[in-house]
Image 1 (cartoon, protein in one colour):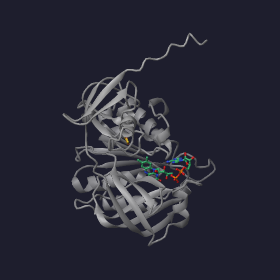
Image 2 (cartoon, helix red, strand yellow; image 1 turned 180 degrees about the horizontal axis):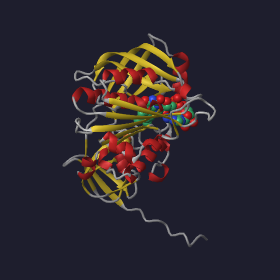
Image 3 (tube, helix red, strand yellow; image 1 turned 60 degrees about the vertical axis):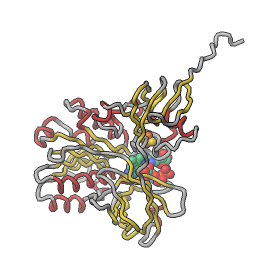
Image 4 (tube, protein in one colour; image 1 turned 90 degrees about the horizontal axis):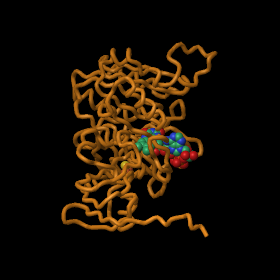
Length: 354
Ligand SMILES: Cc1cc2nc3c(=O)[nH]c(=O)nc-3n(C[C@H](O)[C@H](O)[C@H](O)COP(=O)(O)OP(=O)(O)OC[C@H]3O[C@@H](n4cnc5c(N)ncnc54)[C@H](O)[C@@H]3O)c2cc1C
Ligand code: FES
């Protein structure tokens, strides 16, 4: 019976972590991160879905099969050229010699110093940390209420300081019924104790003097603010065009934030808002549609942008990247921060479902 089923032969491989380092036995097709963790290796990791960059691994020899398009990952074009992969998104295809960067994340506790409940059910949260935390623009932290096991990822909305930041701020969109965002929307108050680990991720575009187009969907504005504030400080010439996509005009939580940014930047930041769900009968006379509708050749010619930052939901990030590629942009100039839904760690991510 069932003789037409041939038993699949498993091929064993060895993975060595660093020259002369620990060796583990794996099967062909094993997920590199999962298999290493199962074998007790303290492998750096966080999201497990290819967004945080924490499991970044240099393949010194051997082959892995990517489970996602690494161009959409936090790996830079240079890192891809140098043979870096994401262990959580790699299937082992041969014996491997790999090198893994040691864990640099830190744990901090702190208290909420201010809470604002903004339109569109967005919580603007400021925390005062017990010790400064260093991060780079566009990175994020995992946040939880102190002593709670529910932890979620949120992008820093601040300009990173060289000595680290004692004060950090976040924009958290309430997801009704969401274990963390809904609880925070309902209960967050000054004085509450919070825990953070981080930083995670990477949006590190090297040249700060070039103009950038920054595309944000909803609270994707948080990492964009961090990137723009950082670059305004580091360059006296770079200009920024922010394309900001929202549902309806009453949900615009960022009106004041963007006005302040425009004044602070002395005209170097220009923002275009586009609404996807504004009722036709409303008196809104601005742009309507998806943020990709603003990504035109004319806009790019005017913005003279050399770098694009795209932050927000995964479908939005993918659509913007595709649009930029169709306008002739190279992947190496597109930096993305996709807010994968929490719980997505159990999904197999590949380009077709991004
Ligand atoms: C790298 C990264 C950075 C992020 N930065 C931010 C940020 O700056 N601001 C922000 O508001 N959010 C951000 N997120 C999303 C955030 O981490 C949480 O996923 C989100 O707040 C929902 O958590 P929750 O506990 O309230 O919902 P959960 O209890 O985890 O989920 C409740 C329901 O909502 C769905 N869901 C979960 N997450 C999302 C989502 N992101 N979008 C739509 N549906 C979802 C779930 O599938 C589930 O059905 C980021 C995510 C990542 C991976
Ligand atoms: S653990 Fe692999 S990218 Fe986050």
